[in-house]
Length: 198
Image (cartoon, rainbow, N blue to C red; front, side, top):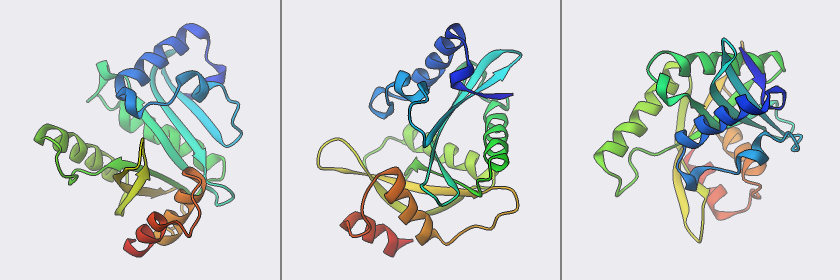
């Protein structure tokens, strides 16, 4: 069962924090308390419960008025990986979104072809993409996301239509993500580059 994080009691929320923090390195994490506070009207924090025990966490952001959602965080209990929890969390999140009227879930993943990464890191990134492809997500051309300092981080944008919706044009998805997730204008150089490559 999936529930909003705002409905989870403090002891369970501590376990959700552990799952979240063990699943993402510090440089990729946002402040957990801010994520689950429910103060942003365009974001929803969801918790996967199994027999009342937290087993996963997902963070979603609406992409303006598009009817699409961006998956900011998706993580399951590391002690239970490989036991179908990821697929269960995916089904619960996408069912929740479809019931709310969303027609697309989009998200980004680290590029396995990024120069300078280790073979072990490349394998992890490739496995992550394989998992999402099994969930019927598609990969777009690469794009770059803002990061600390003057650099842009190379990523791959992925998306999965929800319910009976058809996949929109990648150009529309790229523009919506840059505008509503990253708050960038369409005339920014990085946005124009990503649109041309999509």
